[in-house]
Image (cartoon, rainbow over all chains, first blue to last red):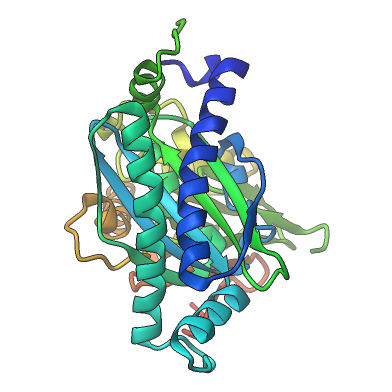
Length: 204
Length: 162
């Protein structure tokens, strides 16, 4: 598929996909922490590489990124991101410890596991919906500049395309103690498969 | 940022005359290649994402790759009046952002980018003066055309000039 031919219908389908996937992921998070979590309507963004780094405001904003590779019938990346305050709050809430200046290995591992549970819910709902086989990698965490973290999925898709497509869902806890983003980044070839599986007619 | 600071994004390049600064914020597995004509102080920065253009199905954007990106940057500098024989280089980036248990090819892309960048520079006879590559952290780099110094800023891994 030519990425420039992505039209409103495709975007609506992708938004709905994001809606279902992140709805499940966020429900999983909410039941882990026993609090209500709201999510925004997912956005689908088609971006040039030189714009990608500014998704979180400044490219040197520090974020916690938890990254997954999705293989099987489709190739996707999942990136789950939290700001530092939200990640600290989650750790405090779930582990009952105060986070110091830096996250310890066990705290990072706990964050990976939170990401894993959420990404797992996202993926299993997509897999059920599309009837496509999807295998998710173990989580990998990085706490660093947003631009540097986003370069990983960007590079992966730069081999196939000059643009990158994100399905992004922002979510937040009622008192804004937790704010995060969930990205599904399918590669260009996987679009056809996903859209086909959902019975969307493709032109061009 | 003042008027003399130019930002370079992914798969992007800029050239500048002195006095000015070339900046790339949040370099991860990509490599930032600075080329510098010591005499005229004309400098260029390209932010490459992948090693070689012939290994990719989509190579329409020359600035995405080490080989075509560096060649294109040299052309841009020559257009601005740089002298090919005075051009030197400094590189930074090529980190492995996510250490993962799974053996995924994408995780080694940083190292592959660094190797390709060095091969390309060497084949073009451009001396590599200094580098700050590898590791598992992001870098923000800032090249000062006046001093010829490349400032490297990181989160938790210090600040230095190379």
